[in-house]
Image 1 (spheres, rainbow, N blue to C red):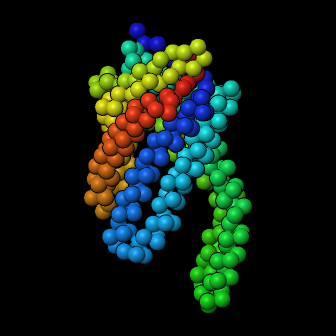
Image 2: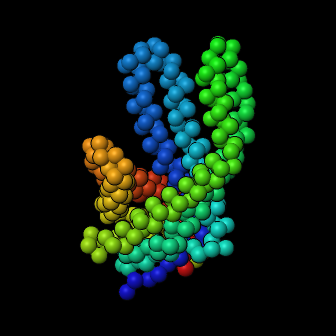
Length: 282
């Protein structure tokens, strides 16, 4: 019989630590590939570029991961005290059902709050950057470009544009997550849900491991369906985009499978060394 579980809170330390570990490994691989390419293409200049680019990729990824995971985890822990937390059903280590309403609403709110914070910070920096850019454009005689840049920047401060962006962020996240969760619930009786070993503790439950195959297949199929929906909209808007739509469907499936496979594989390997993800479940 399936047991219903609610995620009452996330352990921010374990969430951030394991997230840093996973993304640090990925960033190092990307940095090494970039380094090799730059050395082949640029020679000495490529070596000098590596001195800047490689540390930027690695440390930039780590810092952004800390902000992304810790920030969103903190917002989740605050929100669940006011609204329903994410809930799911698990039976013999298999997540058989996800509550579509709770997961879509709370993730949409988290994304909205995160967007507001980032947007406010961005607007605080824009005047300084725009002033210098506009001066350079006017001094070089590019008045048309300067006017275009000024109009674009003005739009960023428009209440109407801000309202449209806020609604778009919330609704797109809400709909995408709702559809994704609904697809998950439909598929589980046929292909099986994601399997995970969750060990109960006194305060927190620990995610000991996640089955790589089940997670990769499920996320690939969900990505395939979502990609198909987006592609259908593309074709309706412009039938000439049929080839691009087909490419989008295939890339969604392959990307969903590979990205999930890598992330889950790294979690299972790295978490043994730096600690498992901990959740407060009820």
